[in-house]
Picture 1 (cartoon, helix red, strand yellow):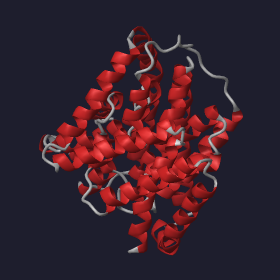
Picture 2 (cartoon, rainbow, N blue to C red; picture 1 turned 180 degrees about the horizontal axis):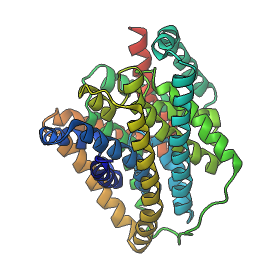
Picture 3 (cartoon, rainbow, N blue to C red; picture 1 turned 30 degrees about the vertical axis):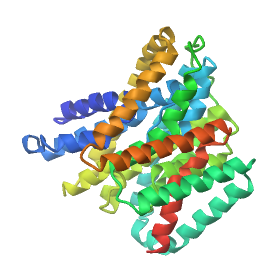
Picture 4 (cartoon, rainbow, N blue to C red; picture 1 turned 60 degrees about the vertical axis):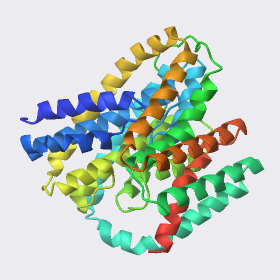
Length: 397
C-alpha cells in the first residue's frame, strides 16, 4: 500500500498529541493544511486517519496517570486516575485500550452489517427522530436531578448547563473553547488535588483478568456510538456521558472498558459518516469532507484497523515506561508543570481568538470543577455544559 508511510506519519503525530493534555488533533489538522499542496490528497487522508485514531488511544495515558482529559475522555478520566492512585494505573490503560480496540472492531462490523447488508438509510432515520432529541435530553436532565445525592450535585448540573449556554450557544465557539472548558473543568481541579500527593503508589504492571462481560460492554458501547452518525448536535462526550449513566458507573473495570469502546467507536463512526452520508461528525472528519474526495470504504476500514492495531501496541508498551518515569518523579512538581502547561496551551491557542474571553472561560471552568471536586459531586454531571446548549439548539431548529 503506497500510502502506508503517510499513515505511519499520522500515527507518530497522534502519539505525540495524545501524550500532551490540551493538544487536540484539530490543532494539527489546521497546521497540516499548510503542507497539503505538496501531498497527494489520498495520502493526506491516510495521515488524518492515522492521527485521529492514534490520538484517542494514546490520550488514555494523561487521562489515567494525571487525571487530565480532553473533550472525549472527560468521563473516563476520573475512574482511570483512581486506579492509578491505587497502584493500578497500568491496569486502567489495558482496560481502556482493550475496550477501544474492541470498539473499533465492533464499529466496523456494525457499519458493514447496517449499511451494506440492511441498506439502512441514515438520513431518513435522522429526519424522523430529530424532533424527539431535545425532549429525550430534557428527560435525561430531570433524571439526573431526581437521582442527585446532594444539593451540590443539582447546583453543579445547573451551573455547568448555564455556563455551556453562555459559552457555546450565546457566543462563538472554537476548538480552543472546548479545550479551555474541559481542561478547566476536569483537568486542572484534579491536578490541584494531586498537589497533596508527593509520590504515587508503587504500580503493579500486570494485565487484568479477562471477563466475558467486557465483550458485551464494548459491543453495547459501539452500538451506542453508532448514533454519532445521525446526531449532528450530539458530540462523543455527550454520548459517553449518557452511556455512563446507563451503566451506573458501579463496576469500575467494566465501565473503563465501555468508555474506551465508545470513545473509539465515536471516532470510527464519525469518519465513516463521511462515506455514508457525506458529512463528518468531528473536526478531522469534517476536514476529510472538505477535501471533496470519494473515500473508499475498503481503504478507510483497512487504514482504521491497521492504525488501531499499531496504536494499542504503542499504548500498552509506552505506558509502562511513562508510568515508571512518573513513579520516580515528585508528583507535586509534575502536577504543577501540567497546570502551567495546560494554562499555556489555552493562552497560546486563543492568542488571536478572543484571548481575554477564553481566559475568563478557562477560569470559570476551573471554579466549577473545583466546586464539584470539593463537594464530592460526580464530575460527570459537568457534562451538562454540552447537554443544555444542545437542547436549545434543537428546540430552535
